[in-house]
Length: 425
Image (cartoon, rainbow, N blue to C red; front, side, top):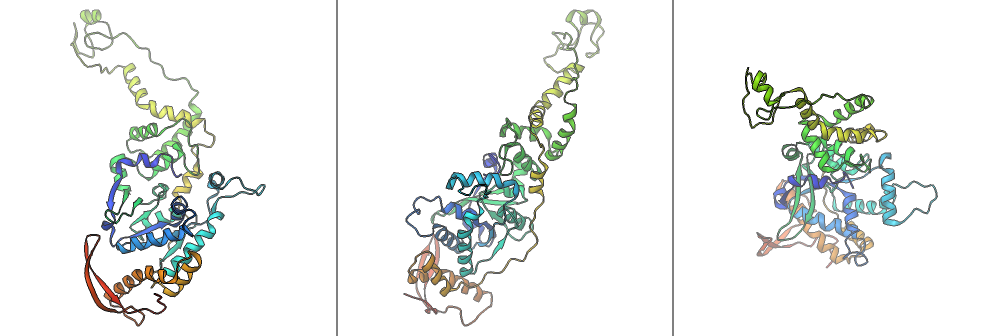
């Protein structure tokens, strides 16, 4: 779920980018997201053995062929704040829990699939890291610390955890492979929202840790509030509201509206101005005709303040009725990242023998088919290593150029390679 309506709010900053533009970048991938997505592909359900593994392999292979490096993030324990949300989401997918009194967060249902994915990544030599809690929080941490250039996730919470660049909505079309890019810099520039503002939206509109948010507050109202604050910190504003709650029952300042002149629109009647003048027009007799409705009198000034504060007052009154507002524990969940500085492992050479065994046992792939699919990754890895000056006896050796070809619009060669150990035809 993430923050309610967040992607609709961020639509003005969505930027479609071609995958070719990401060549050379390193991206953090929320592994659980890919597992979930594989379970919703109707064409694979009941047809493909282990859709999550097939999806992982072919996505990784495709992105690797585009020159993009990936670091996969394994989710940790779900925060206690999210337990209720995960239980309800889990019951919608799999039905009510049979265990009486058991609190299920949904993480246990993915353990087997995630473990299998990690086994596959080990066969492929791909780096992965363990998150302390939510995977998107670790993705954001790696991005904020400069370990990766962006995050691949559908969960907009990544921005609330500190991510700077998020990619989503894959289209792995061979002719036009692209995805959508969102950056924190464009969010600030075009929407006037910083990280604290987005966390404030999560409190007002709802999120995984606070599903209902503040009842009665919609995205238009919330965005209008951020606009009227003109850069003021929304979270600090929440604290100010809490202090003001105790004074809400005090009588409001009331200023009586007096009659205004039909000519100059200042206090006093036209006849009064005709005889005694108008102090705002600085005249002793008559007044200065004006088309402007602006008046500096006390009543009009108070009305302007009321109109300017109307949106904020409306939301503040609704927030007052929410027990626990401003929900400091939810705010701290986003602000305090529990992940620690880590060293990401380097890519290792794919293990052909291990992959054959794994693909045969888990995905029911014929060993010769598994060999064929992994060979592209093996040759790419060895060529990159050789180009960097690293050579060893395990590297595949090219025998000859069979012919020139054009693939996805790019000129290339079809190569005949020396048969590797464990290769099956």
